[in-house]
Length: 305
Image 1 (cartoon, rainbow, N blue to C red):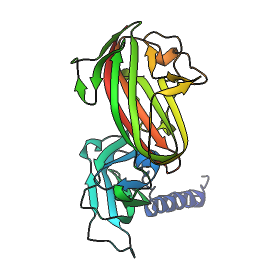
Image 2 (cartoon, rainbow, N blue to C red):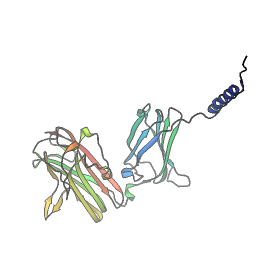
Image 3 (cartoon, one colour):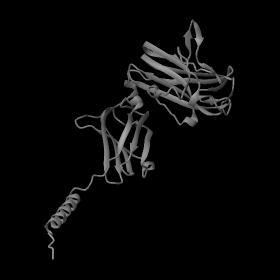
Image 4 (spheres, helix red, strand yellow):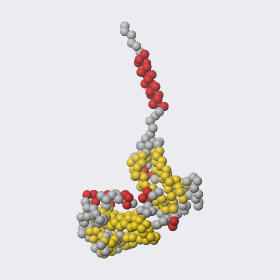
């Protein structure tokens, strides 16, 4: 009878058993959430203004599913403040999602003291992992800003007839038809230094909401006005009107025009931004490039093309 050598089989069994034990000792780590397109403050300037709107954005992908989303503004160690204050927020609507954009606006409370703070953005994953981002931000009183841009005197006319002005609707719905002339006027006040202003139309169906000129996608916007300024003194203002060849204008567009009013190089109104019936947003965007301060305003009009 032929003998069988069982020793190699024994070694194979021991090796497999040892490998299983090693796997148990070192289980695979749970995938952590990841984040892109982080924006903290207007135009990502990492600054909050007391009593005013604060902008935050982050695109989040969970390792498995989101269990919690938290934002914290906490006193920085070693800093002195006029009083004790902190801000902690959480948003339950993101729980259970895999991919999401956390886009939030909230006011910096009036009781917040000026100073430098630690800013935390935290995502807890249902698989037990965690993403935590820490940044420095500054909270300031508007009275202490080097310049404080404000949008005002916003007005819309159809064929030279005023139909909206500064929060007052002359007509309950602002409706434009093909070949109507749309005039969109706005003023930026309390500025100095250098800056740029855009007045644009964006289809609401595009689900595109730029809040800074840094994020403008010219394939999606129809430019009505573009105005730049340089070296303005304190307390200056500009409007959507501009002077070209000693003639004031530049805040009008005809519904159905082939090109927009981008100066000096108009963009064709084709593709994703081609004219069509529907609701559009009229958006005014201003950035003071000297002091990295941004403001914007948006309101709806209807086009029946």
